[in-house]
Image 1 (cartoon, helix red, strand yellow):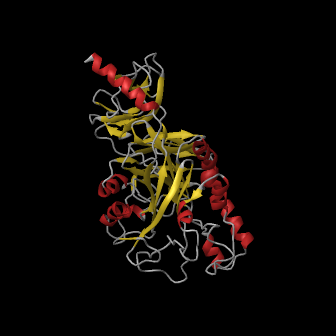
Image 2 (tube, rainbow, N blue to C red):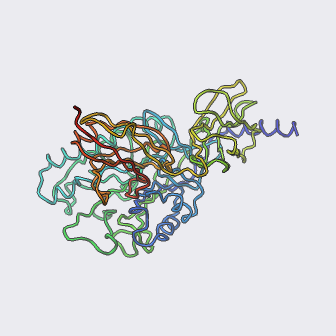
Image 3 (cartoon, helix red, strand yellow):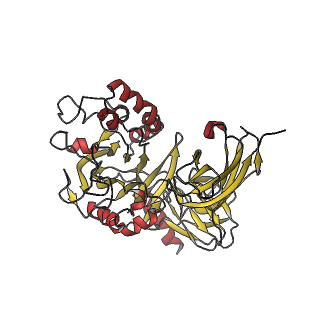
Length: 481
């Protein structure tokens, strides 16, 4: 047994050192429209299957991401990034932004990030309503350009270092590649700032690479109708959903997925969204994987097993996969790694873990902790809860909130409301995202809420950019003296 294990480690090391072969990968961007339930939910999974996608950046899943992945026949899910995949997903962070390494094989990866930029004020509607180019550009810079900029340099550097890197999403912006002087369907040519910034950073628009002529192939993704085929009067139609790439990824094809017979639709299926989707196929040369260890699921109830998937196992003898505390290098549990190339997962029980934050990681033979990612254990009966640090505040005083028991979706959020007999969930006075944390604390100030007048208020917990109220608490603001 020892000789076989040693032989496996040697073979694994040789495999790791071998040059990567080019392979095909299909990457999709799909805004599924408020959880994918606005028409018929099964249509969302069917559309993903029909596209042949390997990795999907999903926008607006609203807590339904695992259900979407199951319907699409995909095994891997990351709610904190709104990604689903046929291949293991490893969340990572670089330069302050979060993305994923997707492991196409046990030791080869690509990088994927998924974005959903603000929708309002919407540039094409400003054009429609008579705003000047300068006014439209000023709006784009103030609403969307600042949101995309943090992603550009960190992801572009990954591409420059040989990692095929994809930034996909609903950008809620047209492209300067479409709004040209030769396109009679646009009111005037315009260099839309988001697409220009992506191009300058080295990202290539895969749909326009495959279909260079915006007149012959406009590639309209907004909108097939809300729902199809209902297109509202004076609606502005444009291509705002993109799959962009940098690094060693060559565009082979890019297909529009939508309703049968729709304008420019390449893959027609019964449709369930207010956006068409884009699925682009690339020839990629995946990069050598860094040390990675990821717990699945990242939020688990105590007593439920957690699977830790890992990469880079055969580089050194004595390496182990481990469950570690939130801080500190001393493992709570470990399992040895034997270097078998087809076995990159370890299963740990959680019955002995207290509720709280933990890390999954790799531990070297010398005890160095590598490739960690966080996960959380909740009590078996845990449910969402929120509370304020006090019940009474003075006007303008910061309001400190704590929450727990949340599912850890990317856009779970807290909203502040006036207390009313019936809560208007659309009438929030201010809000803040939870950074995909199932438990934590934050302070909301006048910068978030303005100066709230004396009165009674409610703080509510909501799921994943939607309006499903999961928990609430009350507080008052009173004048001192």
